[in-house]
Image (cartoon, rainbow, N blue to C red; front, top):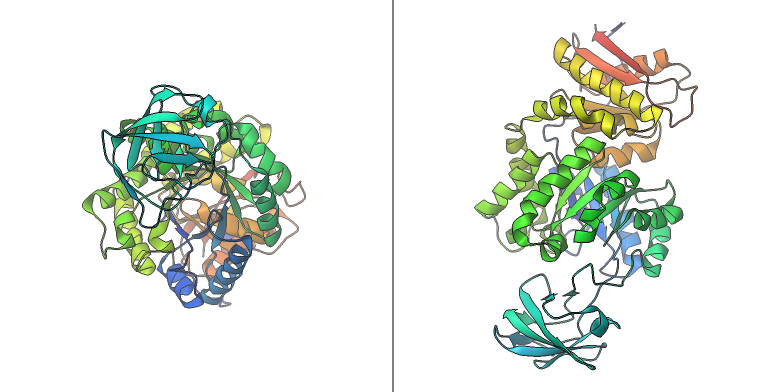
Length: 492
């Protein structure tokens, strides 16, 4: 099939050079219209709203600012609302905090009264029942580590293993297998309904431990937003495959995961989680302290640069920035730095090995007949792209499932997804390598293929004389039916 080079002109789109996506947290350092525009121009694909900080009204305002800024710069930017989940905190320390020295002992007691150098109050009612001798307790982000020495009727006695300064109301980390807290909380479900109604594209569920946690949020959100399961506990790791099956994406939340599991296991857990996500065909986000030093410094550490590159070599779909863009001194520079590191790492990544491996194992994880058709078609497209030297792979998709399945092969050719559903266009912003375009609704597969190629050429993403591989399905079938057409098209 040959498509003539269209003569009509349209806005030229810049071909995507970096294929790993960037998620940036929006906060006081980045929530002005001018700063948001600069962030999106620098390469942010998804804006994260951390609902753990501030009232919901402030996040609704940020959502509106993000949408308006993205429209002004003509970028498709997704929005991720991150639910707080259950959080155990210490009672407030005196102003300036207190120093906990290694080797000293301190008592912990249930309640939310103020904490001091002799007693830490913890807002967890069953603290005395759930802690046992030898259990580790982490204060804050992992800098202060305690070990339970004894449990009495009114308090827990602990020894300080690693000291530090405790201030404000820091989080208190208790081993996840001991916690009775459940997720999602009632507040999470209220926030989920509010943010879904406001039109966010993704919802991250914190402290996920089982598939049922995701299903509870799904019952509230429905199909209005894609659900991202945050893997941050050893319990979640034990149930990972079941969680992946009911989620739309996975976040490797390395902060809490590195506290709940032995720290030396963390790099291997990251690689395992990302690999399983790619195999199952859902996006993986690698998060926490990617460029942490750039909160205050103008350049990252050498270790951070290596960390970002290694996450890309692992096969992650997206990299997430937290405090770096929320409260950092130069959020735009952070994004530009991550963009440069990612582009350089991708030049060395062995993505072809992913495709070869997936071709052998894909039958294990694709259960429905529609999924099997999609798996077979995208596998064939991956091979055909190499055989014909295709300049691009074009996925015409209603729900985004075809583009998601195609992206797991990490093709070398540019991957362009077109959809007539505005939600799908934004929800594909998280997916590795996918550049999105809107497409009108047509009556036949021939029309879909013809107009999809025409649209891609008009936007300057494919040149005359190119060969492209196109995946599509019949518009007369149900919207969630798998794509079942693969065509190789020569652009005249």
